[in-house]
Image (tube, rainbow, N blue to C red):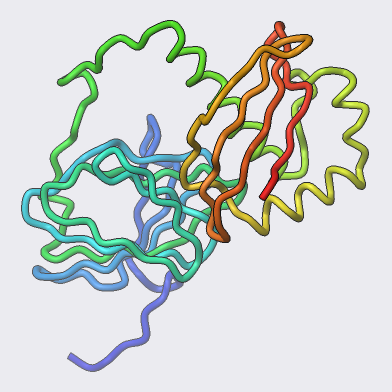
Length: 233
C-alpha cells in the first residue's frame, strides 16, 4: 500500500461522549487490526466515563489546550507537548476542565474499542464522607471553579461578595487571567489549614502547578461567597 498523507480533513470521523454521543469529535489517523492512532477534540466541560482495557496499552499526547487524565484515581494535568501512558487494566478517564477545547492523539495497541470495560462508581460505592469532609470538598470545588473562571476572564458575581466584585476591575481581571493562564490549572490542591475569620472562614491550600508549588488563600463568608482569593509563592 503506498504511503498517504492523512489528517482530520480526510480521515474517518466519528462522534462520541454525552447523552447523545455527539459531544466530542474523533478521527482515525491509523486504523489497523493491530494499531489505532486517533486524533480527538474535547470541548470544555466534556469527559468520558471511567473505564479500563483488558489488553490495550494506550498513550495520550496533547496537541492543544489542557487535558486532565484520571488514572487509578490520580489526576494528571497535561499541556501541549505532554504525554501519558495508560497500561492495560488501569482505570482511567479523559476530562477537559479547561476553558478551551483540548486536542490530542490517542494511540492504542491493540485497538481499544472492543476491549473496553466500563467502571461504574455504583459497583463499589465509596464510604459516606463526614460533614466536615463534605464541607472541605465543597470549598475545594469552589477554589477550582473561581480559578477556572479567572483563567477564562469572567467570574460569576453570584459566587463572590459585592465588595470583591467591585474590586475586580477589567484591569485586575486581565492581570489575574494572564497570571492564571501562565500557571495553568493546578494538578493537585491540598488543604493545609483553615481558621475562623471575622465573617466566615479562611482556607490555605498548597497548589501544585507546572512552574512549582504556590499557596492558594481563599476567604469564604458565612453565606458561602468568596470575599478574598490570592496566590502566593
